[in-house]
Image 1: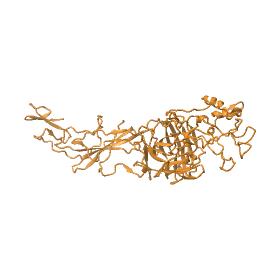
Image 2 (image 1 turned 45 degrees about the horizontal axis):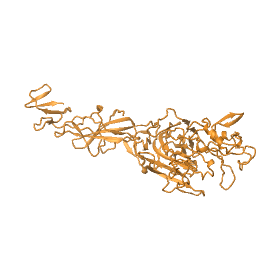
Image 3 (image 1 turned 90 degrees about the horizontal axis):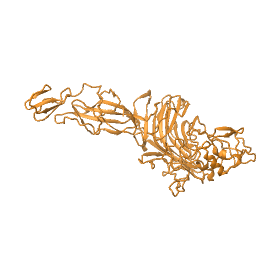
Image 4 (image 1 turned 180 degrees about the vertical axis):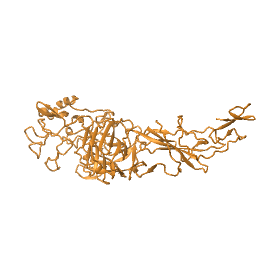
Length: 590
C-alpha cells in the first residue's frame, strides 16, 4: 500500500462537510469541477469496488414474448434483479439481467447444452438502469469499467425446429447503453434488448452469430425479406461465394436447382463461436461503428480456392463442399481441423469465448474510455480485481459523442435478450466516471486526524491521502503522534474500512488532550501498522495548552510540557544531567 502526501487543509468543524458531497443514487461524489456546471461523478458498485450492489441505485425491467408472439412484462420471479451469485464461494451480490434459465442435467451432473423443461423458456429481454442520470461535460468525456459473465449457457432445440439448426449456447448477449432518454422499452428476444433505442450509444457483447440466417419477414408468409442481421453471410448450396443476395427465387431463396439456392449455416455440436464486442449508435444493432472478434476470427473473411472465393473460417462451409449438407462425418472432420474453426473450452480462464456449456464462472472485464474525440475499448478475461487491463485497446474509433451527449444528462445501464440460445446474463461489477480518467484498478482513500479542543469538541488537524490501493482491500488507519494528546475512540471513529473504488472511503481517528490521569504511552488505533507516520507539515497555532507539567508527588505520571515532551518520575539515588534531582525520585524527559 503506497502512502500519499499530506494535503494542507484548514481546521473545520466535525459537523461540517469535508470535501465530499452526496448524490441520490450515486453514493459519494468528488467536489472537483470539470466545467462551470458539471461536477465529476464516480459511481461504483459490485465485487471489487468495495461496495455491494444496492437496489436503491437501480431500476429493473424486462419483456417476454411467448410462442404465440404475445408480449408481456417479465414477472417478478424472472425479471432482472440483484441476487447472491450461486457460482461464487463468496456469494457476492450480482445483477442478473436474465434469470430463470435452467439447463438440463445428465446423470453425471453435466449438461449437453440443452434447456430444461423447468426453465422459463420465453424469448425475453432484461435490463438494469441507474435510477439517476449523470451529466456529461461539453466533450461528453467518460471512463468506465465493468465485469460480466454468461452462466447456465444452453439452447432450446425445440425453438430451433431441429437440433442441427441450433446455434452456439449463451446468446444473445449483453449491452452497456447510454441514452438521453429518461425512459424506454427493451425488446424481447432480439437486438440484445436495446434495438431501436434512439439517442443512444451501446457497447455490445454479442454472444450469438446472427449473420447466416435467412428469416421470413412475417410468420404467416413465405416472404424471405429479412436479411438485416449483423455480419450477414449468403450461403449457397454449391458453397460458392458471391457476398450478394442474388438468389434466383427472392420469395424463397431456399428453393432452386442451380446450386445457388440458400443454405442455412449449421454449428456442429454448438462448438463454433464468433463472439464480438461492437460499438453501435441509436439502437441500430446491425450497424457497427467498430467491432472486435474476441477470438480474432472473422466469420466473413474469405480465401481464394480453385479460382473461387470461399469463407475461410466456417467449418460448415468447408464440410458441405459438393452439396453434402447433412454429412456428419465430413462435419466431424472439419471440426477437428483447428485452422477451420474454434472449439469448445471448459475452463473459466478461456479468453476467446464468452460462454460454453458447463462453464459458469468465466468472467470478462471491459474498459471503455472516451476522450472527447475517440472511444477506446479494452477487454480481458478475469474479474474486476484480477483482470489485467490491456496496454493497447482492441478498439480505437473516432466517434462524435459531443453533439449527442455534450452538456446533457445521460441515463445508463445494461440490457440483454435471449431467444433459442440463452444464458443467465450477469453483471458482477460496474464503475463509471463522467471524466476521461482511465480506470486502472487502483483507488485512494483519506485518513482524517482530529484533535480535541478545550471545549471538548474536535477539529480536523491533518488529512492523509493514500493512493494506489486496490479497491476492495481492507485498510486500517496508521497511528500518529501529537504532542500533548493520546488516541481515543469516540462514536465518530472509523479506523478500519474497505476501500471503495469511487474514492469515498474516509477513515477518522481522534485524539484527546492528555491529562494527568492518562497513561503515558498512547494507545494506537486498533490494528494500526508500525509504519512511522509522516510528520505533519501543516501544524497550526491553535493547539490547546496542555495541563501543567509540574510534578505530582502522588503520581508517577507527569503531564507533557508545552513542547510536547512526556515525563516520568522514577526513584534515583543521584541527580543526572538529563533530569532534575528530586529527593528519592527523578523526573526524566522521554
